[in-house]
Length: 65
Image (cartoon, rainbow, N blue to C red):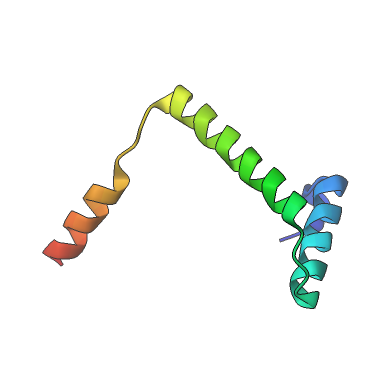
């Protein structure tokens, strides 16, 4: 993927995360912020499209295969 289409701030954040991963350094504050952002996005999606029950369908499809 070309980094030209990614915002510079996002690119820096991604690079910092990769550097921490390689060095095996935990960043609890970064993790907390990421979880909060994921929770916010999940709630926005739930409000916009409702609850989507895909897991049940996937399990049923797996059983029928």
